[in-house]
Amino acid sequence: MQEPTLDEIITARNECAKIIATHGEQFLPIFERLEEEIELRKKRVESLNRAIQIGTQNGTHFGTHLKTPNFIDTKLSNEFNCL
Image (cartoon, rainbow, N blue to C red; front, side):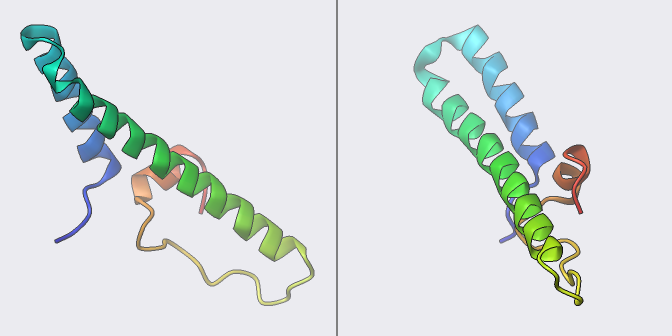
């Protein structure tokens, strides 16, 4: 089973927000978990960017072979101007 994309998580969070607005706060834990996942993915991209920047600034003549790692959503990478 493939991990959901950032867009899918954002869509789910937005739908959950609509459900909460209509039916009450019993679904708030799901909303919070989706928010946490969105932030986690943003932090992964930021960490990856820092690691690549550090790794390529320390005199390596190999550069980076890392293009799009499996755990990074391409759209998220583009959103944060990385890779």
